[in-house]
Amino acid sequence: SIEDNAIMSEFRKTTATVTTLRTTLQDLHETASTLPPLPPPSQPLPPAPSIALSRQLNEVSESAGALSDKMNTYRSRLTAVDPVTGQARYGDKMKKSVSALLEDYAALTAELESAFEEDGLMSVLVAREASEASLRLAYSAAAEERRQEEERLAEIKAEEERIASLTEQQRREEKEAQEREELRLKAEEARRVKAEREEREREERERLEREERERDAAWLASIERTTGGLTKQISLLPPSARAKLLEIYTEVHKRPENELARKVKLENAKFHEEIGQHEGGKEALVAAGWSLQKLDGEKFLVLVEPNLETDLDGWSTWFDRIKEVREILENYHC
Image (cartoon, rainbow, N blue to C red):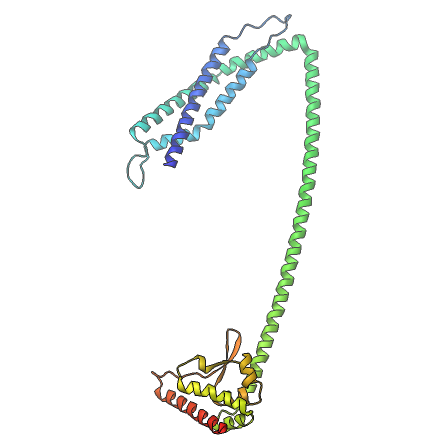
């Protein structure tokens, strides 16, 4: 799998690193053992690799130390068992490879400990560096002083540049922080204004809806829902509107189960033109038993049908009322 391939790739990389570190350490020992003797103080000091060697030795030590956690992981996995399969995490071949890697790493660690002991390679290199430094000072003190002065001036310049860079960075950060704060305040103000506007709009909608409900309730209460009330409303209508009401009731009488025939949208242009615009038009339907309902934000007059299965008497009374209204309309039509 991709994961297994990645694990093996990492293992091979780690093995190669340990091998390289051991080889480098061995090369350091060989190079240190073949350093030429130091010349007398009267002669210029030839280039010597002792400083570079000690630096390399420290780098090897740091690199080996960086592998410690990884080695502990490999060591713990040698005896680890897969919680799902119950099998060892590593096979025999992998165990052998891991064991060999751990042995190499242990050897590397031991060799490094020896190199950093009191009489080890690092001590030899440090002593060599000290001797080289003494000789170098003996015949080039002035050059060393100039070099140190140049380094000091370079450090001062670098520090000045660093401070200038930090100052500029701080200025930018302060400006960015100020801009962010201004944006935050603007966004907060915009949210507050929006919330207040939405609250006003909500209150206004509620007020309008409440007033509309109150007007509708008052309008419904003003209509007498009796035969006399119905006759009164019908008498106010022109013949054309009565004829359209008769068409509606004829359809309802023929097919009382048809919900569409028993539902009229008040804003319907055709209904308004033929019936709704006339005094007594909508009122006649209310007097006949139609109720005012709001469906999907629009007003309808609906003739609600009782449940035939659970309220047979109520349904019969309802249908008798339909026939009665139809007869009244027919009498007016005739």
